[in-house]
Length: 561
Image (tube, rainbow, N blue to C red; front, top):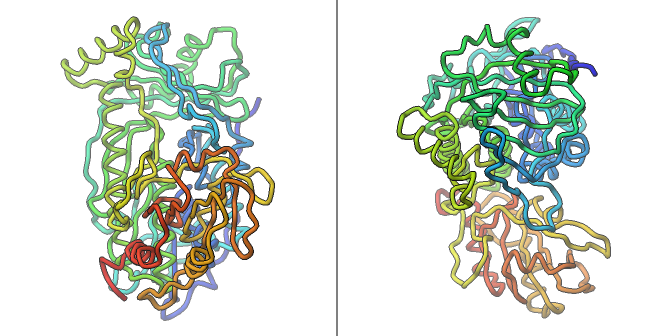
């Protein structure tokens, strides 16, 4: 056994960035954490130049964000590191909740078969950051370590940054600035921007423990266990025999005292047994809050991840919602930078991700209120639910040990075209796409791997489409739009059986699950966003309605170039 050793990334002289007057860069990202790195990778995949500034020279200390949900893994698939993360991480779908020593509730994150990725993987944040850094560098992102942004001045068409380095301070300008500098966000504070919500008066101890144990790869949560009475405990398995254990301590606990090994080790021995060898890798005390900025966009400055919103750790919504922020933001920002959309499209980033943040905060607050009740009424309710759940199935669904991260259905987005045809199922406009097994050129593959590289029209076909329909599909890539450069739309045919259609990308719905999950019949058509969200669907393809839906998805109704 041995503790993880953080890599040290090389400092590069800023001489090439220093000039008078200051240089102007098209895109700068502040923060080389998971969200900032995801944004930088996405930018490079779109061919955009990006400069990343970080005040540190290594990855995060301790496991921190440890649970990466299925939707995040699908985003990481598109960014190019999901396979590596899944191979190193611990996959799991089952969560169990205990009262004292009795199991009272169990859930399965992916009850249906036919998905490429599991419901969750557990992987220490520092491993994920290493993978993201390597990927960003391989794609040509310019990452500057020990470059601390100390000031940002906003202008109508750009932002000016003051950057402090070991070789001195200099100014640099950015057409667009993405701020992903974490929950304490020095840039947010420097700009005097508000963040509102609740701060919860409770303290939790995190212990990353290196040990060999035969516990299953599941999420275990205890209320009032015998080894830690009147409090709660959470256990997760991570990679390399590291186990994450969270102990509820109460608000009166002394943080500095509780972090001492002589306090931590007896707690672990009481839980694990005195004879089990283990080694402490990292110990921390945390409190938490549920709050967000009023607006994630401030002109040319855009906030993402914990810099924009924070939730309690129960439900694994922090990093997961941050990846979704970057996923939503970067396709819109890419179109704006390339002159293919009006910058008002970025207002929909703020609107949609603020909607998602409110949803996450609501669920996180409910979980936290159940786990750490602060009133006599809520404590009585919690205790009665737990007591009933031991014997009555109806009460088990009320046990809330953290409703886990699920992607937001952006049903209120102004980019959606409302249904005019009758559909069933969950793939409504605004929904994140469901995955399903397919075949491509006779080889097994996955639906989500075939989409997400731009706007796409997905047509379901039980027989080769007519010449008229094929002509409509072929014209998708040159639809006239009010933008400086046409937006490319790629056609995708989902066939019920193998078909040879020259010039068309054809995938086969090998198990019928795509048609089932998308309530599709012959001729059903979906318009898909670059971030794998549905924006429109019809029972038959029509060029006029498709053009109108695409124009709407590009924000044409909120501003013209």
